[in-house]
Image 1 (tube, rainbow, N blue to C red):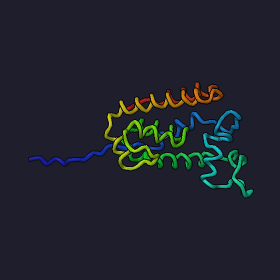
Image 2 (image 1 turned 45 degrees about the vertical axis):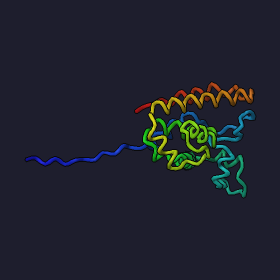
Image 3 (image 1 turned 135 degrees about the vertical axis):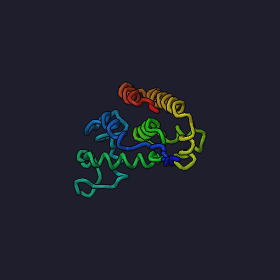
Image 4 (image 1 turned 90 degrees about the vertical axis):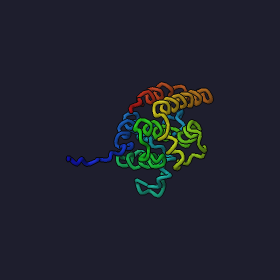
Amino acid sequence: MAVYKKFETSAVNADIKLLGPIIAKWEGGYVNDPLDNGGATNMGITLNTWKHVGYDKNGDGKIDEKDIKLLSKDDFQYVLRKYWDKWRADEIKNQSIANILVDWYWGSGKWGIIIPQRILNVTQDGIVGAKTIAAINNSNQKELFDKIFTARVKFLNDIVKNNPSQKRFINGWMNRLNDFKFKE
C-alpha cells in the first residue's frame, strides 16, 4: 500500500514588492505645483508625510522643502512600507485588492481606509483591524475590487466637483487608477 504525503497549501498573501513598481510608475521626481494640495512632493511623498517620518535629510535643523528634494528610492520604499503596514496588507489574500487599497491610502490619506471600510460594512474609523481584514478576505474578491474601484472614481470626481482647480489632475488620477486591474 502506497503512502502519500499530504502537502498543505496556504494561500499566498499580497506582497509589497509587487505594488512598489506600480506606484513608482505614476510618481515622478520633485514637484511643487501651487495648485496641487500636496505641495512640495517627491516620488509621491509630500512634505507633510515626510514631517511625520521626522527625518531632517540635510541636517539643517528643520524638515522642509529642501529635504523633499533629497528623497531617495530607499526613502520611497520606507514610506511605502508605512502605508502598506497601515493597511495590514501582508494579511490581505488578494494582491489586486491590496494594491488598490494601499494606493488609495497613499494618494488620499484616511479616506483610502474609511471609504473602503464603509464598502465592507465595518466600523469606519480609519483603523485597519482584524474585522476589516476578515471582511476583505471573506468577500467576493472581484465584486469587492469593483466596488472599491467605483468608489474611488466617485471620490476623485468629487474632489474636482468640490474644487474645480483640481480638474487639471483628473486625467492623470484616472489613468493611474485604470492601471489597477483585478487578478485572482
